[in-house]
Image 1 (cartoon, rainbow, N blue to C red):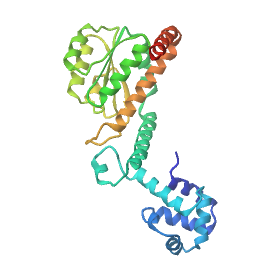
Image 2: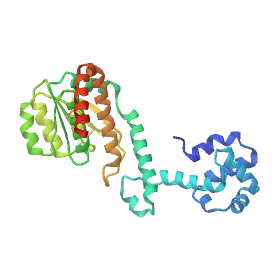
Image 3: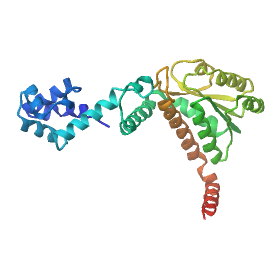
Image 4: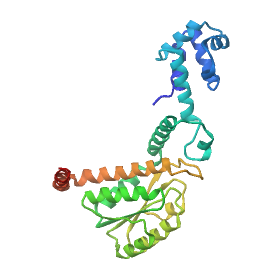
Length: 282
């Protein structure tokens, strides 16, 4: 989605000379303009107040008041990261934070297109499609993606396993073979429990797929297949907000890719499950 300031930049060449002066002043003084009246802005840009109204309409905004609100929203979406403690220093309303969450998550998901390698994705899909058993594991915020993946692939008829309990997973790994897949999920790629289980799974012959960042972490080096997510968060995180969305995006991609291959085989089971749910709702 194009930001307001990007829209102004793109429109500059099509604006009248007076309107262009307003646009250039706004781009150079974005922080100050929301606090100006039309009279104050007209003096700064050396234009009439009527020209300011025409400028607003030229970029698709009906009034100067609406323009100032749109500019303030645009600034709020780009001057703060929700992934570190700087958010505590802002006086944002819940609705302001709602828009920031949308912006951060959208940007993180779009960044996946630059980090995920097509060949590695194909290798992951091939390994999972032919797997006898799929084990997912993540710690902390990454456990959300592991649980979601286990649920989705169970629906496809795969023997899928996950657990938040490291010791429980230690009892699962010995039963893996070269026909199985272990999916390790870690943003940092340095989580000790994830690395220990990854190495254990490799010793049993399982194919290891890592969902991690591009940082060439220990997990990246250990894995057979790398599904890389963008490094979208700071060292001090307040809830793995954006990284969780990138992990879930990768999981959804794997799920739909496998469904594309086996969908017809499991449609009846889908219908059976849906029918049972409808019966229980009555």
